[in-house]
Image (cartoon, rainbow, N blue to C red; front, side, top):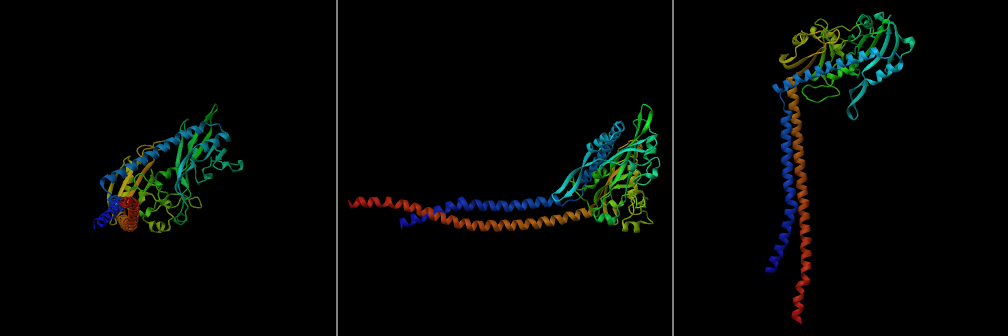
Length: 434
């Protein structure tokens, strides 16, 4: 009985030791993992169950002002470029170097996600003599042939309809420059839905002087995509994040308005003013034509004409035109809307105070934003439940397997110990026989 008890005790001790060393740690780890999954899920839930509170509204307003200041700085930098262009040697090499050396990243979507691709800031640079004749023009595609050069003393010869930049620039003093409005072909809704986007330019021109006096005008075409980049990739409620495409239908986007009230950057490019196939400006939407043009997606938007849709748009434009920035919340068609606006403090030639270049707007449908947040919370909770169930199953199966392994190892070790003892137990018996 004593030997049997000793044997059972030894085996039990080994089995318990293996259990403590192998199975028990996994059990504790499993419990910790399960609780950790729940805790992470709770934290993620709280992070996504968001309401547009005062602090977040202030953050969006601050972001709008940051973007407005960045646009102003970008335009100020272009002043330096046009002044440099006006003193460049008027030859193909110098103009080609100017085009290639001025680049800036543009966000694009790709198979690997969102990428930033360097693109030339200017589409062209040209020198026009004192009579308005283009003498030299270099574009992103190279030097333009002589037979394709134009006489811009007649504004009707412009690439985008009536363009009078030569007439405006030739009367300026040395060092001054002209910056024109945004011009480009209008993109209607049907084209937009197939992937086409607005491609406009801003003309900048400056007079050139030599020893004999006025020699002509240098002109550059700023690719407007670089201005649109400041707002096109922003979702106001997602601080610090940028997106390749923003859906205006979700009412959580940024846009830009010029000093005349025209929308010049918007997630829906078909509301941006542009020219039709006959080089005529597309009509601006107003109360009389809104239903027709908005449905077809063939009209431009000027916020000063949109009071019948949202009376706050003309109000914001008026405040921004006075050089003010701010935000407010209002109700529109039973929807709570948060709007932030920021004056763009750029006052280059022709952009006088207080209007400046225009303003940045950010709009958020508060109720829609909250509902999307709740949907995200439900999705997270479902994932947490799946993760928790999966972790419990894995731990349970692992416990069974390890318990069996622990028993096998304990039995094997016990037998090894017993085998080692037997020779020692046989020695005294041989001595007794002697």
